[in-house]
Amino acid sequence: MKKVLIDSSVWIGYFKKANDLVALNELIDKDRICTNKIILAELIPYLEEKKENELIDILQSIEEIPLEIDWEKIIDYQIKNLRNNIRKIGIPDLIILQNVIENDLELFTLDKHFSLMKGVHKFNLFRK
Image (cartoon, rainbow, N blue to C red; front, side):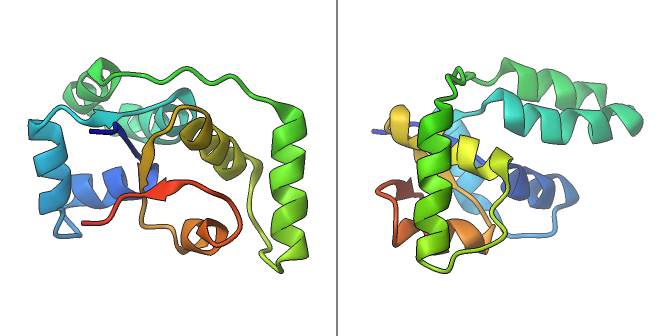
């Protein structure tokens, strides 16, 4: 089974208990989750500010998929997005996209723009 990269949007909902994320608990139990430095960089500063040291330790213990950024691919992804009228995709999300594609991962996200990009780029979105 493929590893599942858990996007910060999922973690935020999980920590706030704002979403029913039974699927995330199942992935955790099956040891299928992974992270990367961009996702950690999005989450840890806010957790640090709230003194959520235990959550920080948990996040840092998750398998981390290294980022090997290929700027030519990032540019190509954005060009394809623009040609398909997919706008306002930030560089961090393009790096996450490349990380998912290059490492044959599934992406668990609540961000709708990844669904839009699914029609242009070949990658796997996790479905609950």
